[in-house]
Image (cartoon, rainbow, N blue to C red; front, side, top):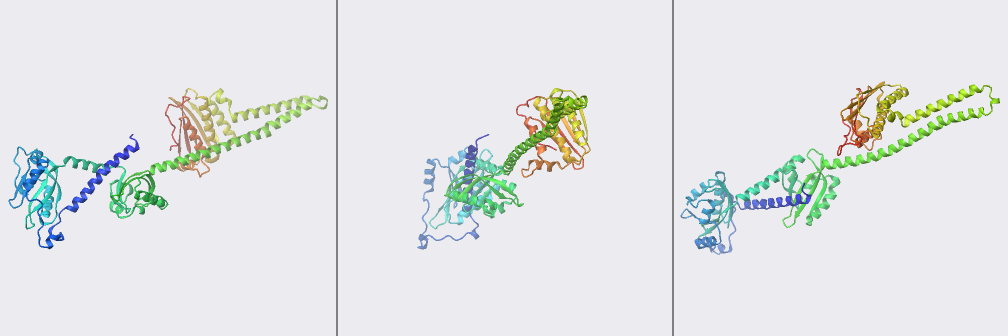
Length: 539
């Protein structure tokens, strides 16, 4: 990739050449001869008002030709009275006719002009003969001695006799084929540019633009050029745009001015303007890029970061709730049981006061067993030892059994295939993700049965959690998970982010009324491959 400043310099050079060509073309069009009937009568000169004739431009054209030839000029002369054309040896050499016969009559010379250009050349010459122009420039294709057409430019000057009539036409001869090819290539780049290129005046209206404008915005060329630029600018960006215009009119270039620009269908696109003014010519050249996609991505990133902050806050709240649940379980369960055990043991210190000591001992042992069971269940809820002592498959089987007992929802667990165990961190993450998906089934699915399937594939471990509940609209759930204003959807969002962090993948398959299936895919290695990134939720 080239640096941005190099791209800008290259674009400025390209457009500077295009502007020079555009101004030359306008000048040529203004100098082109009009039909005689439409040509206005010229204002008489002071000498003509006094009955004097205008002085001839040159009394000795042969001497002028000789002098210009000595300076290296390529000249031709058309004697209207004799109907003869005389060319310099330099023209013959340049055009490849040094060893070939060159026409000496205007008719023969005109036959060497490209057929489509002949009427234009004749119209220019005729206008010069009947008008009062001092000179004219003609560009046309001319047949050279090698039987190929070259672009030629000639500057024609009329020489008048004592009566004021044109007696001779004298002109130079310049091969501009390479220049025309460069101009055509420049125009091709201008027209094919993906970016929008434009020349606009200090009056705020577009003067020239490439086809990208029509393609991107939908307006026609005339619609864009007939209205001022501010007509298309979003109301909220008007003040910023006016300030930028004032700076441009003072001669200051503007780089990457972002504004919303109105399309023909009423929508707005974000455009980035880099503008370079030419105050002496009262024009501005602009390179305009469509950055709507970047703006949307930027907004999405900001929303995503905000959502992550919300997720962090929610996770903190979840941790607080878990601590409260743990404290309540200890206080209401274990603490009460321990208090009862202490009371029973205290009675044993006074056996004479206990009618049936053996029954008291058995009752105390029963409370101890119950307390140990509660402690074991609480430990399993927080961090099941079976997950690390036996493996993920056994832990998921225990989790499904506990879920079925607690909720009454039938939960089938199957483990197929053999493969290496995931690393400790990945096992914990997989277990927590499945537990959270089961919690979602309990809260949202209205299902009466669900299933957990674990499969070992080559290099991967997949876990499928499915239910036959009411299902949901996947895209709505995804947008809800990404919408920072939404207070729901944290379950899927949290699982997705955890899967992405370890190079895993989560896919969701659901439709309203058809249940839901969630696929979790883990790499068997503890560390994901370099550069591997997990996907977003996919349908």
